[in-house]
Image (cartoon, rainbow over all chains, first blue to last red; front, side):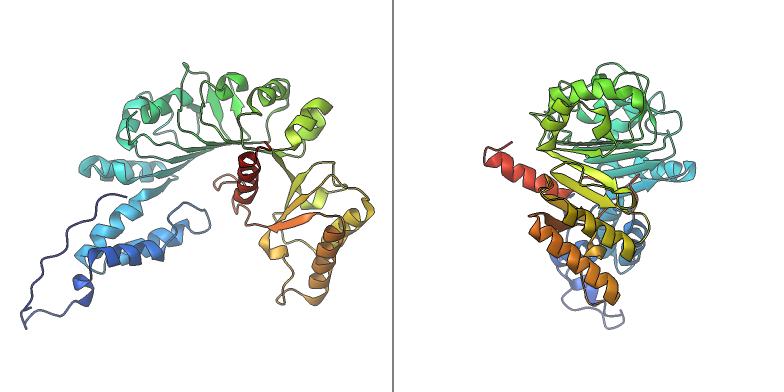
Length: 151
Length: 221
């Protein structure tokens, strides 16, 4: 998992005009533990949709929860359409968040693995521990995976 | 080695693997191929130099033309692997010598509805897409009862086949009698979650892999 974000500024005397936000004052480690305990950390078809929905909700609790939930959300990614591919690539491409993804499930698309520049695309995904490719139209060449696993 | 390079698990389902330049996936430990076709040879994909860390291999619904080389691959890999998972249809295509060699570390998968015998394998996993009916449980129980000295020692079933109060009374009784029949024949039943979607989830039995690891640690495999 990526390094923990810094604790939010500790304002010991909150302004009475600001609403009290108890979640924002929880220790980062505790928020991390709460978030990770809320969802399965690995891909499973039965739990995936609920996992992602839950993490998106958790991310709305506070800035700290967002900072912690977002890497967990992107740790497991399932791409089943061209649109999802494009959104994912745009998301991780802009922010260097590709390194958060450790499990990638690709269903019925060749954007990563059939593309002529697949190897260079995969270089930014070197933290991948699990790849599932299902029904990828056009097939795959396994040498492109060396982008993830070369010395 | 780059400390971030970490691909450990590769699952390929329902696709064509095209011939490519030689590759090495140095840390892949688990490989699943289901209904995979290849324009190369399976030997090219599975040769030890390409997958030097491979420990668990699952091959399901492999095209008929690949079986001759699969037999060769089996002999090449069997000593290095900790476990293999194959569909039971493979049995008919392997020679007796290969079957014997495989049996010690292979979990065979079989459709619950198609079981007619215990197949002379040590480890068998029964799966069913639909809910298993009472009659099917009774049929398996009768097969176990009628097999005097089964080779089978491990039977993997889905957790919803474990006897429990929430089951219908007759089915619960049948499941209990299946447990008793298995105990009498010294067959251990393992209730383990099975993939909901075999084309996305891992079909590798973690319990079986653990047992094989333990056996290997004791010098038995």
